[in-house]
Length: 502
Length: 101
Figure: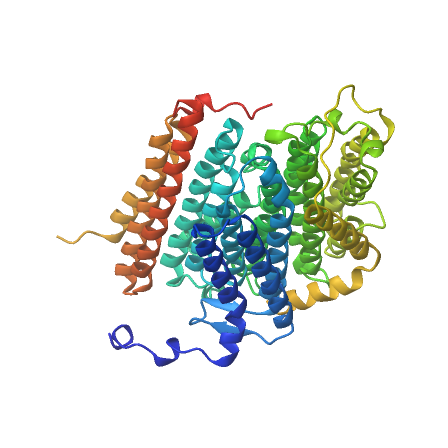
């Protein structure tokens, strides 16, 4: 009883390393609160101040996380959180994607007459949730961070509240997301019952200490947790929500979801995956069982994602199916992680490359979208090269990158990912992935054909001038796509360092 | 009379799957929201049972967090239902079919 009635002094104080490691989280939280106060202050016109404070919060937080990247691992809050290179690597990704989303949204929100301060606050809160998720070591903390992120994003998806499609998307996402969270939580409860802990390090230690196999309750709990995450990353057969949500959400938010949300779900999934399924010393029976089912998920995800994307004419919906397909490739990398010399580094690199090209593509879509998110069908892209040559060029770079054509980020990331799968002797899986990837070239190139080889539609609405913010986002993403594509070594080294710290 | 833990755990799992079935089968959004709450409460009960069985306080602590998050979740959920009702004039999921190919 002593342990439960006394409070250990070291839980109430922070050492300087811990305070340092927490600084990005505290900074983002403080900035969000400041932006919240500004957005309800009646004396000022809140449009610009809130925007600037929010973007600066995200950018400075990103620089701070970048500075902490090389720091040693620090355990926080009685091992409930950890500050390591992996967490800081992903913090940079999340905050960059939040900042870029806000920059790309500014003009879009003016056009949609939705220029409310809450939008930026919710993006920042979602980013904070993602940061906590990537650094959490306890399933309950992961759940809370996940909910902080998801609740903000549910509202953001329904932000065009006078539009039925946006409402519908938000409602669908909310119902399925809440059910998935509950499944994840039930899995956590069963794992707690089997191992007496919700900490993933303790769970890992428990699994390694069981030589004769684990109880059925543990297996069930682990599966429910994994199902919860398969839903969040939208792997087949838990993908049905994704195209609807991506289509109905405001375009910059769709971009945020493909970059930040996906990276956050995968970052946490990799952490949990290693501890509940692929840790060292796990009984071989569980490992192969798990391996088989994830392989089936990965193959189905790639095949269905690519096959359905072929028939789509709405660009947002097409990119949603392509996003499902990319989830499949990343799952291949996760399966291969244990058996290859690069480990999980290609997965992390792929997530970054994918985030970069999608951020750019959705920034272009946000610029081109007519009022109420209309005008994103394939035929609206006809002759874009003569109407907006630079945007057409940027879009081509992103689409070629998604198709995996050199010298873009998509090619380098895909090459390393498939190479690691070959090293792990997953030849059949690599063959399927490469075939799927070849199919995907068709629907990416179809957009290019429309942009460069078709005449503009008769009576097409004139395009608005491109705002400085959005142009900066697109330009920086083009540069990054080509940079990672031509010189991937630097980014791969960073990814490796991040994974090594796990 | 002492109630065996497995009885409570079975009870919890039955409640959980009733909730899950409700989310999948029912067509009224308000009932779906209730079903989600049912799932979360089944989880709470599971946590408390394990906490008692293992003599470990962590489970009961988790329940506090889950209750808080569930409250926030239903607040957002009801907000979305109202937003939807204003444009759609219905809380029936069969009416939700604009986003479908």
